[in-house]
Length: 348
View (cartoon, rainbow, N blue to C red):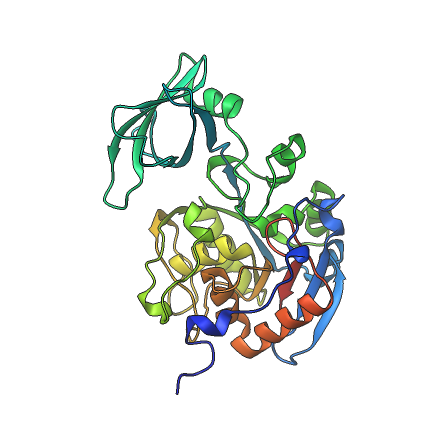
């Protein structure tokens, strides 16, 4: 007999397709907010802008300031047939090389090119051990400018439409700075400059970090035992100022609020057993799931996640499996909007 929450099938739930948000709310902070209280098990309902009244002075709000690349490059092969290159991450050498997914994979062998625009071609250089490609961008323009001009917003696969002008702004947090993600840290999409200003005026501290979100964030767990799942790696950076601010917050009796699973994964990668934080950067493959005890944050703001996903398992580790699945059942019953452009939850 396995404990509840220890098997992948435990994270299945029925979600009507109509609840998968295809477009953002009219205003970022008008999304609904479910408030889940771990100690009492109580579930309450509010709007995201009410968050300003939930976070006390002296607490710290941890934001992931990564910026989403226009990572989908749509073009044509030499034959004129359509092709796509999905940039996953730069090689690190600053030479225009990226790890990428390509389609159609059988046609785009090393040496082939995809013509995206007169000023941008992509050459397929090699195939990696995990069947992705190493590609090289060829353009007279600076690399970042070519991607920004000719790339498309990498909307998640469950948004069944092409990207539109609205996505350029709305699939990006208002505090995004460092280019590097191929998916948005979606809990942060609900914040507005006005809401951040209200929180600051209340004495809520802001702590920034970076985790560049990879495409693996959407990969479902396909094995029965989550321990057998190969976790994707993501690059993070936590500056000294953030580590010191979070240590000072806890020393003063305040709480650390992680905005999103990406922030929590980063915090959990740099926190020690005594609850202190350590600055640094690198790649993390951390997989947070029950029965792991979460040390990196005291509160969690998050969206509603896919069944059988590592993100749902992370939230269950933070909130408790039974309470989290009950919250999801209520979210479906009350017709909350799910996934990237959907509504939010705060676990306190």
